[in-house]
Length: 349
Image 1: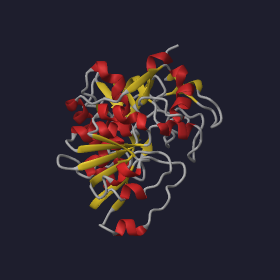
Image 2: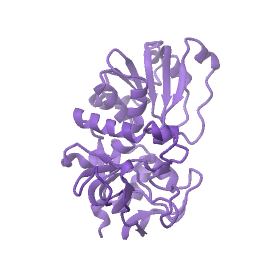
Image 3: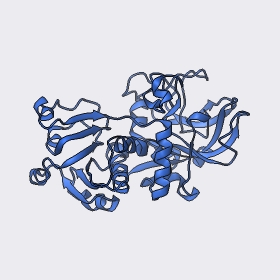
Image 4: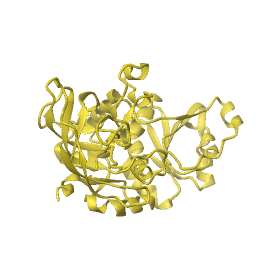
């Protein structure tokens, strides 16, 4: 099945229209007509070959929502017309300890929604900047939000689960003081989710102008991290800090804000490493620096259900596919509140 898509033929080339092939649904496959696809910073890094191993032509996109348009004969959990989503995972080994625990995101054989190995032509997966996708039912997620919110649900499939997973793992909830560093595509979701979980949420930003925006997202307090007095006022008071910033920065300042046994968890992926913190910053009061990567399929479904229950979606700007190259440049400048989403109907032309 040949369909319209948008991708790049080289890392130094803009994205452009192209044709790709999708397999016919197999016994356990679900075919999805894509309605919307979110634009993640990872898309830009991969398609511009800033991350190693990009296969070209590269069709990005792993925040996919749409409706089921065909199912294989052995699919029982989905039917035609269902609202569904596809996140960052379209395959895994299915039998390792991680897969058996529903942590496919940590499986050594995890296959990403784009640029991952597949027997399908051309030999690597092609993502959601396209009209349709065919995926094994295990990796398909049910969406319970109203259809009218579907575009704003799309970023939950990456930005949502990337922030939800560490918040759940570190037991964020009532009685906990939680910091969220950065108010962008990831950070704005972290604030919304931590607030809905019942924590006291403090947002950290380098920009004075973002104070009111962060409060509107659910932050109880906003700290400008360049203001040493504001930072010092929160010394040794946080149970957990989620750092969403995708640029190299000083971690010491945030370690100083943790209580004994507090954790600073990194989900932003900078192009250059953070300066190494002093080991005594960790030894003193048994603090932890940790990392977290998306979530497995069960946890992603849990996140979607939690967001539907609490009315949580991303703040988005809807674009046509032919605006994607400009959107990338704007994203680099931080000129979006807070996530671009592609209207896939614009691929029909």
